[in-house]
Length: 278
Length: 262
Image 1 (tube, rainbow over the protein chains, first blue to last red):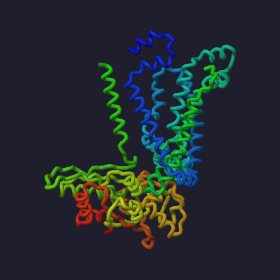
Image 2: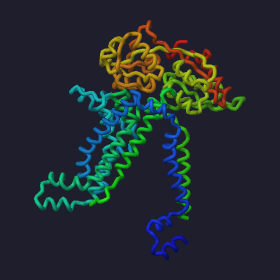
Image 3: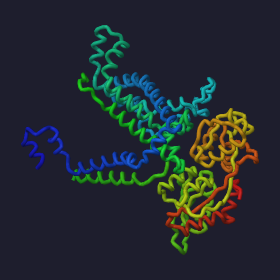
Image 4: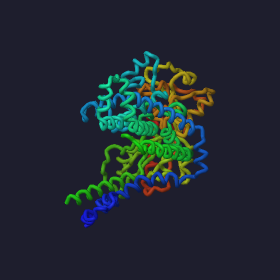
């Protein structure tokens, strides 16, 4: 059959040969997944009243949500890098399925509402650390800081996952060589390790930023919903959508903006330089 | 054999996906089927009706629905959320038979999708604080210095709050704007917010977990609750029977016991 034909024709291009091993029903299901994933996003653009969307995109509430979302997500991604790179390094030098590994990746599979409730239980005014924080005059709920904390909580595993697997793939040969030549661990880290994993770091940061931008549940429970302070784009979409139909344009406008950003972030996360030593 | 298994799994996965595409209600929506569904035999086949009710009706409509089920043998499915969220869902084609709103504005937003709304009860806004009142709130004038949570402007409790604050000449920047009155109550009850503006019935329902500070009655603190049939309902007789029950002495006594005014 088709497999025999492919084997007989040794000169067949690689792509065609691998395609022929995909059973037809798998192609049909693949088409189904494609429609399932792409159609809703296309519908979002197709159904829109552009004039209304454009006006809504420039509304005060939409602009404030956009600015707040980008500021907080950028800060969250930065914090994730600061905390995540050392964590990835520590994890990469341990056995693959350690308990530590599971603990760090837990928020990845935790429903966001659970994350929000958990953060509130720890850092809320009446939470475990609330009174201690209050002693320093710090109250986190309803602040922009709470938004960033929620975003770091959900975004950090993405960065760690990416950087750690890159570190594992590279092994420690270069680091050992550098150490053998008298380089200090810190110098090796900045001159060898970071450049080696920079593609993974870039995609990890993009995914981390994307996750922070989309964070909803934990923010709603832990940070609240106030324009300009804690109302990020997903919360603004939820609030606008729940306006009884009056502010649907704002919801659609913000959603479309997030779709555009998502496409850019996907490109950043998956882009591979042509000449890579990796 | 193996292939057939894979195909079966794939079909099952597709079926799951198809299940996912049916319209779902928003995440904060609470769905409850009223207490023990007694299968009392009745003349006409009892259809299940779906009631979309304002969050502030959570306790009372749960009781009323259970009483109605016991009396008629019908089944009532209750969905509670902020009135504006419920209007959004009705506009998106959610399968509701009845809509009970906490204000006329949101009933009006439903437009032709509902028929002949009638006012069935009314409520009034009040200040609540955590039981220990950490910010020492004694009147509406104290709200700006406390971490105060209110409802979003589109939600009835948010619309009244805005009116009340404007009438009393107080400029307040809340720390959060919630999608339903129950979300405001939760933040106050947990002690995360130092004050909140909710209905007096919510304050009463929370009991001693919150402290109620009544607002002056010369402020526009009242709101009337209209109830209406959803035009697309397939069970209008059963739904009308429920509305009649809410308006009956039995239904009204449940509402009054909870602090609603006729």
